[in-house]
Image 1 (cartoon, one colour):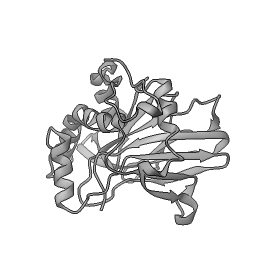
Image 2 (cartoon, rainbow, N blue to C red; image 1 turned 90 degrees about the horizontal axis):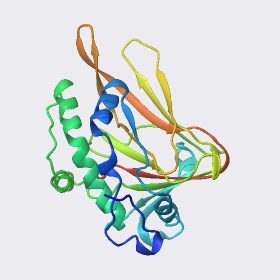
Image 3 (cartoon, helix red, strand yellow; image 1 turned 135 degrees about the horizontal axis):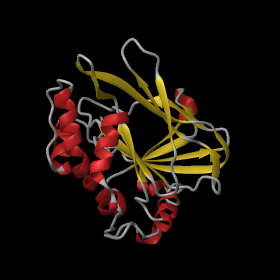
Image 4 (tube, rainbow, N blue to C red; image 1 turned 90 degrees about the vertical axis):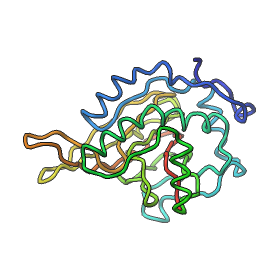
Amino acid sequence: MARLTHAVDHLAAPAATGIDAIDWATVERELDAGGCAVLPRLVAPDACRGLAALYPDDAHFRSRVVMARHGFGRGEYKYFSYPLPGPIAELRPRLYAQLVAVANRWNATMGIDVQYPADHADFLARCHAAGQTRPTPLLLQYVEGDYNCLHQDLYGEHVFPLQVAILLSEPGRDFEGGEFVLTEQRPRMQSRAEVVPLRQGDAVVFAVHHRPVQGTRGSYRVNMRHGVSRLRAGRRHTLGVIFHDAK
């Protein structure tokens, strides 16, 4: 299937994605090994530009957050409102369908008595029944000097343990710096940091909160956080795809 190709004036139309080109067996191995995996060329460059161009139009969004006002860092982001733009509405359930088996296996390994339905709509129904009705896909914007502090996107009782961030800007052309960063805290050990290199249209799938690690005495949980390093120049846009909704 072709990748997302529609620009702003076609965003309401159904869109194809690059999901079918991803080696999902490799993604699963990388998630198990390090808690993250890159999905290369998930979104085509013209679609990246079209999605980024939505940012000034508040008609697409339910709220705007200025990070410095809340101690989150510097920069800002906006949460989309329902109905989501067509490409995002298609991308979200299709990514979920590829990741739900990993999420269920991780929970079973960690002794968490929660399993997720195969269909994303059924999982959203679970969220909405618990009062988590606000959509969580978001568009983030950074300019020179901006950064995002290490954090976790939880939002309520029902949390899907994986999420996706898609880089809509091109490093070296649109911006400098602004690397995606993950940290992992293992029991009684120092935190481990990882910088994930991305190009325009690449996505990173990563653990929201906990992930299992196999040790000499069985598996145990590690705590994950993510953020963005300081932007040294330019402007950077990212699409965040979170699978649970918020209260």
